Length: 106
Image (tube, rainbow, N blue to C red; front, side, top):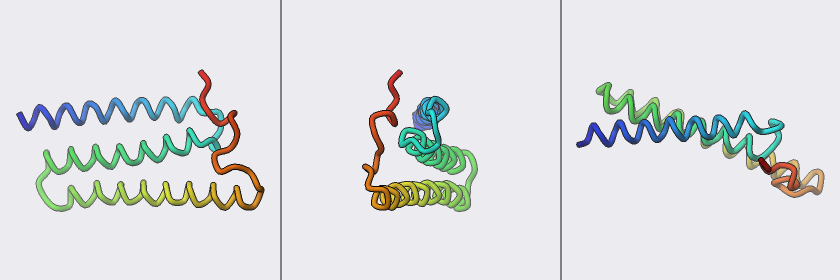
């Protein structure tokens, strides 16, 4: 039963990876919030996949450590994303998340 859950979680994470990868590719620009948050979630999902696969199929503490380091990279990227958006909005007087053209319309 535990192995079934592991395989199901891994499959769902790969599904999420493909969805957010597609959203990142459909973004018109690297500067859009949709692209930036999609990249953050992709890094986060890759860290979780690594954590699950390494800790369940490879024994040892190093497996968990690799997944946690990838999560750390995701959190640092998210902090940089929010900080640069905040700094840029204060400098230019614009909204943090841009205008309605940043959002995916179809």
